[in-house]
Image (cartoon, rainbow, N blue to C red; front, top):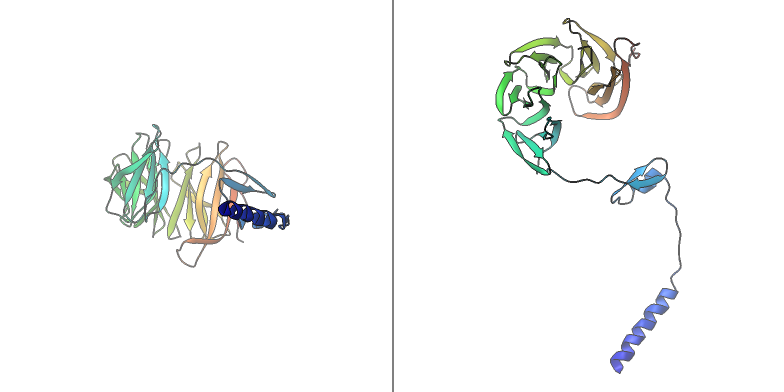
Length: 272
């Protein structure tokens, strides 16, 4: 009986406490306000609203490494270039494994060739590997981007001398661009066979024509051209970033421009 009375007394106390609580309302509207909370499976969508995030599945967790580059082959396998251990991972379905390990610190660039093979650039050796075996030696320290043209030749954007090489099927490199900047960071191609190359330091975009000539077609206000892509209408999109003096990690203002390729008016230079 005493135990029963004790329980009833506790219930009465809690009930009394609950009745004394007042209800308060507050409103959160801006992205800045929403960003202060913890977002679980939702994303902030401007203006002033939340929406469900896309479903995600973690496929690769490489402790202490950074994934720098991705490329997919026709069979659906995805290759991931990483730093620290010189490991190229392959993801098939929902399983990831180390495909090849090379004697390099980082793999900044990966491309899949017309033969369906994985090619990747090792840094600081400047070697292009084909499925883990030495394919070509550029004589540079960094390979920032790899791109195949319609003929099956491989282009390699490199540093620290700002060169672009065309590599044939035997692995022989031919210098096709010797830029005025220390690093060529990005490559793209259009349907006419032109290759575009973006640099770090001056933020230049070069066009390499099929006849072997090259010229600057765009000078960005920012110091680095970090990404290039051409759409199905041959319009060139340029992703930019500001960098610290000399070569350094991208920081500060970023932007994206659209540059008209041959057949359209060029975008005005970012400087001058």
